Image (cartoon, rainbow, N blue to C red; front, side, top):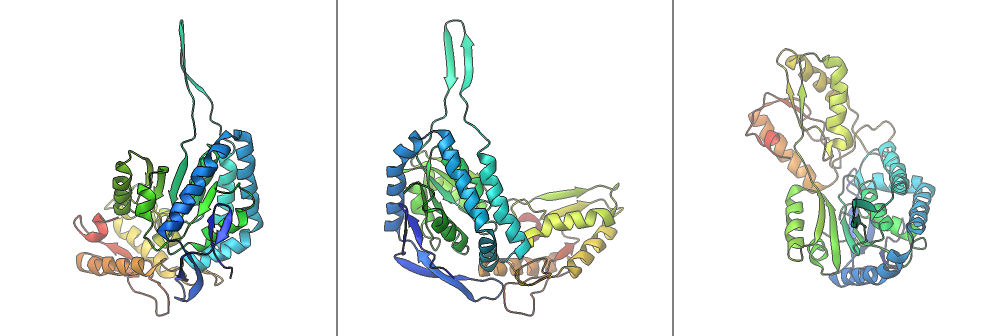
Amino acid sequence: MGSYKLLINGQMVDGDMTMDVINPATEDVVATCARASEAQLNDAVAAAKAAFPAWSATSIDERKKVVLSIADAIEAHGEELARLLTQEQGKPLADATGEVFGTAAFFRYFTSLDLPVKVLDDSEGRRVEAHRKPLGVIGAIVPWNFPMILMAFKLPPALIAGNTIVLKPAPTTPLTSLRLGEIIKDIVPAGVVNVLADANDLGAPLTAHPDIRKISFTGSTATGAKVMAGAAGLLKRITLELGGNDAGIVLDDVNPKEAAPKLFQSAFQNSGQVCIAMKRLYVHESIYDEMCDELASLADAAIIGDGLEQGTQLGPLQNRMQFEKVQELIADAGQNGKIIAGGQTQDRVGYFIRPTIVRDVTDGSRIVDEE
C-alpha cells in the first residue's frame, strides 16, 4: 500500500493527523492515510485561490488538454485504482473496474463541451450577450458509494470552466482520491487541484470558508441541509445531489419473470447503496404474489461476498454506521410487514446483510417512509 498523503499546492504532504481506512468486507485496516487539520484545509484553499488567476487565464483548449491527460492517467492506473476501490468501498472488482474506467470516460466527455457566448438580444440599437466566467475556488464533497465516478461529475467541469478545486472524499473511502491526487500532481499546475481527507470534521469549515465560491455536494439529504445552511451566510452557490426514496410502479401488463431481474438490479446494484436505487415497489394486485416470489428467489440466489472473491455479485455495506442503520430498518420491517427473503446478517466478518425483500408493508413504516 502507498503512503496516501494529501495533495496541497502541488505537493504530497503528511496530514497533521492520520486515520485508518477499514475494508468493509474484512473489517481489517486497508491503510492508514493522512488526515487534514483545519489549518491544512486553509492552506489548500489558499493554494487554490493563488492558482486561480493563472489557471482561469488559460484557454479552454489548454484546460481540456489537462483534463484529457488526467483521463489518460486514470486509465494507465486503472487496475490499481479498481482494486483499491474494492478494498475501501466493498463493491465487486468488476463493478469497481467499471467505475474507474467510467471515471476516465466522464473526464473525456466533459472535454467535448464548450462555453459559447449566448446572444440574448440582437435587435436594432443593442446587442446583449451572456459570457460565462469562472467563479474561483470550488469545494467538492464526494460520498462513499461511488467515490470515483461522482468525483468525475465535479472535478473535470470545474477545471474546464477555469476554476480551481479543493476535493474532499468521504472519510470511509478516501484512498482512491488520495492516490489520484498523487497520480495527477505533476499533470495539473500547483494549487489547481487539492485533495484532503478528514474524519467528517472539515465539511462545515470548507462550506463556510470565505474564499470558497461554490460547494458541490453529493450525499444525504440531512447533510445537504447543513451544507445549504453553511453556505447561506455568504450567499455562496451550491449544487446538491441528495438521497431519495424512489418508487417503482408495476402495472398488470408486466411479465413478472421478465421484469423481476430488472427491478432487482435497479434496487440492489452496489448493495442498494445508490441514490436513485429503487427503494419500494407498488405492484398491481393481479401479479403481486408472483412478483414477490420472483424477487425473493433472486434475493435468495444472490452471491454475497468479498468484492475481491471470484463470483461475488454483491459486496458488503460500506461502513458500520450504514450496517447498523439497515439492521434497524429490517427489525422495524419485520414488525410492520412480512420478510420473504434475506433479513439476516451473514455468518462472517464484515458488514454483510443479505438482500432483503419485505411485502405487505404500509405507509408509516420506516422502510416505506425513509430514504
